[in-house]
Amino acid sequence: MNFYTRLINREHPLPEGYIPEHLIDIGIPFDAVPGDPKRLLEVKTARAAHNLITQSRREGLNLYGISGYRSFQRQKELYTGSPYVAAPGTSEHQSGLALDLSCPQIGMELTDEFASTPEGIWLSRNASLYGFILRYPKNKEQITQVPYEPWHIRYVTKPLAAYLALTGMTLEEFHCLRESKAEIR
Image 1 (cartoon, rainbow, N blue to C red):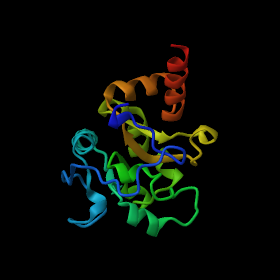
Image 2 (cartoon, rainbow, N blue to C red):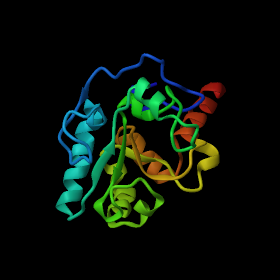
Image 3 (tube, rainbow, N blue to C red):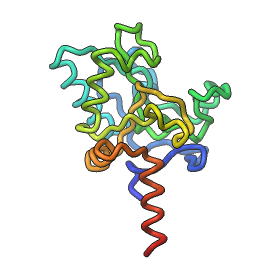
Image 4 (cartoon, rainbow, N blue to C red):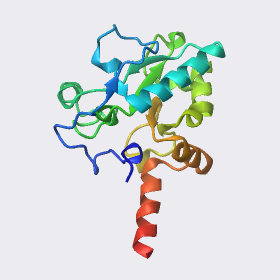
């Protein structure tokens, strides 16, 4: 399985000491000071996020990064048992492949209202063009085991993002499909 298409969740955690090899701050607009680790993303993910943000800006939108990379230790500090905060090792943020986005219209908050903003609408329509999926879609909570998060995108490569966007599948459903096909062989 490709690193970018890897399933990361409660059943498929990252190793405790996992740190992505190539984390960079590519300089996208962020609601965090320079040097803050949450501005970091895995290098290919960072380039895709830069392209996504650049295009959104060309279209007059104001997307901002809120949270990218989180270390195992930082995730441990944040974890409260809330369904919105993954347990250490089970957060895609630890992989450097996930990015939470928001906009000034909702005070840079991570709330469901983001989905109704011009930025949220644009993101849901265009994320797959840059290799991202909306990782925790509405009405798929039983499958992902995570509440709806219209602000959380995950880099999975353009081909897989396009496939998931066209089929409406989650990453969990894709992996179940792959496992079923492997069993048939």
